[in-house]
Length: 110
Length: 115
Image (cartoon, rainbow over all chains, first blue to last red; front, side):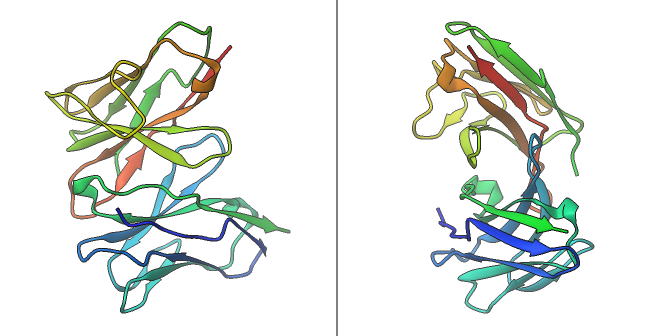
């Protein structure tokens, strides 16, 4: 199982771009990288997933270098409502080997 | 995405009793999972609910304490047995549809308090 390491917490201000980096040195060839967002008293919500290079959707971008040993979630122009815990997971879903790490608690200030 | 509901959304129980949590998804899914999230902590996988066979439990979790059923491809239950205050947590189910997006979708969770 690939282990992930993220910063425990980050602070930002409204309107700024936030980049959260996740280290996963022992990522396997078939592993995907998936990011989730969790608000208090809710289940985690899927944000973005990638395998290599860059992926972008309507809420975030995911940058994955060629060696895939890390990944960076980029949130453009955050707002107060982006205050949440962000989890990086690595693994193969159909093998059920994805495990949640500690996550990054992002606090967006006015 | 998948629409997942859990019942009950919250409950307060006495120690020594058991509670069964239900998870219903709006479409057939390949895999269903049960997680526990203790206050202020990350999610810990309890088990994978297998349709038509016994659940697969993670280290530290046993069937006698957390019996799981999965009678079909859209429904599963988790029972927390002989509860103690240490079982106070949020219990979440998640599903994997087996589609090309290859990701899990989570239910809203069940907040359990054991007195």
